[in-house]
Length: 392
Image 1 (cartoon, helix red, strand yellow):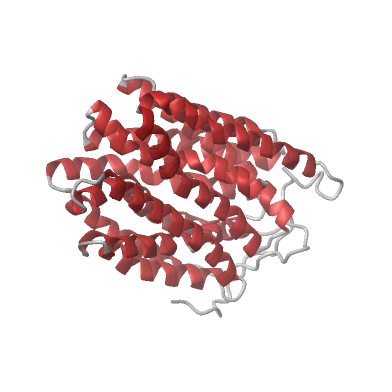
Image 2 (tube, rainbow, N blue to C red):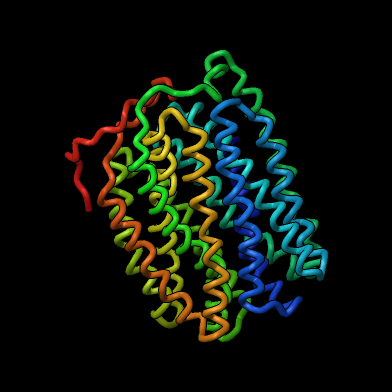
């Protein structure tokens, strides 16, 4: 249920990028203008998410799950009703705040109920990725039929997700979990490693948000202006993310998380280069490989952050799952300005460097000792610095 509700929230993160071609078509927004819309969705989310993480470190707030789900959906549902650019920005920002409120608390609860399992956290992340993947299909299915004026229909997943959260609220009140939420965990914080991890996720975010914002328009250009081609590219990007999330959890059960993430980023360098430079339908294969490469480390970022900061699990979740993920939106206006002045290919080319920077940072990270399933999650072991684990 938690994974499914995660899908119902993240469908609204994916909806912002999916709405971009329609904002361009119906409102004649420039690349820079639609980049500003993506920025509005991410800026408040970037600022607010660590605040919610700090709060959940002090108090358990599972009631945030249904409330934030409604907020995320309401903002997107209203975004298409006004021709005012300022109101569109405001509504999309409201959705971003809802997304921000959801993630730290949901990650805390997921850690509780999964008892530290990497695979379980991968399935939780999968829910969000499936929401991303469903976003272009939902948005296209609604908006192509009746235009942006039908955007209130996009509220349906939020209503469903808020209902799915209710059994979760009851579950976290069971005797074995009561008292776990909001408690300060035991262990030694490794702030230096956490900062490096956060920077790596920022670079990953710039690559993913930049691609998710413009890959639809780029595919349309490469495929002769076909809107369906753009929707297909965005769907492949999000679907590949879903595959990568599950694969990352499985790989981390066999090898070190740091090593798995490092190799994934190394392979993603070539994949993004393929998206930008390889012509024809082969572009879709490279979009898929890029998404898998960027999402194999996704759930691993969260558990690594929680293990680097065992006394501040909520804060770590808010930053790794929220701030550093959404902060990539801050770079999209620059990408849009370059695209307006030159071309989309030129603007997207620097994204190739982003996974390379993440890979370099992961080479410096230690593998912390993760809590095993069945061990109290508020007492993970201190981070280990023996350097014995293999690095890519």
